[in-house]
Length: 326
Image (cartoon, rainbow, N blue to C red; front, side):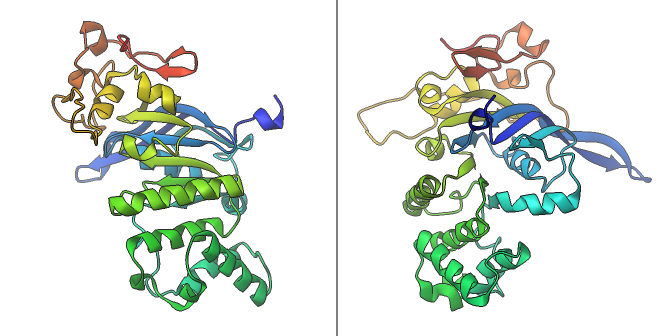
């Protein structure tokens, strides 16, 4: 396989368990299955959307890929190298190529640092743009790229709006010239009117800088335009993965269909059959047997509670369901 066809990021059978301790001696009494045997790849220049309800393991998966959280098992290959096996010192150097944009732009910025200090810090950590004037030029360029005024360098995070703060976070992620960025619900804390601006900015930056994104969101509508492919996650597992246009037009998994039915339609003349899922998301501490979605699935049959479905594929459209939608 040529280098151009090698995925930039490849996740193989990734598992993350969080031990639960109890009793007088604090022994392990169970484990939360946050990520359970997940596999997928992301090509260079691609955006993979990762969607699902809150608590399904999306953010944990993103952090495991960057080794901000150590995975329990499995592999993460970046440029063909398994980063789960490399020493911490080597991983620190590699972090320059792998960055993250967090959900809350205010909580992820140090309120005691000016914009200049926030953007200068990653340059100093990775020893980039050595001299003072060079670093200042880099900071000004980052502000220009992200649609912020150069005079912003002396201001503090609380002096900006939510959308402007997220632009600062994007500029900080771009400072070290990364190849891959995990976008962990980067617009969910913003007003709807601002969300489109930030998504358009990220698409422009991707085109200009040849970036690769894992775009995490709980809203399928948010990822529709920015994603090349979309993966739907439920209770720590990938339920469905397909090209974005294919998944929206022809969902195979009942869970994906239910999520899509919740997207509002702006045209009052059009109606969509709303699929209301029964019950709540099961606890990852004690997931159901068989297909984890079967207690809430409108198409569930006896087999679903006894066997775990394997991944089926139809023309690049992957799904884990015994009785997919037609």
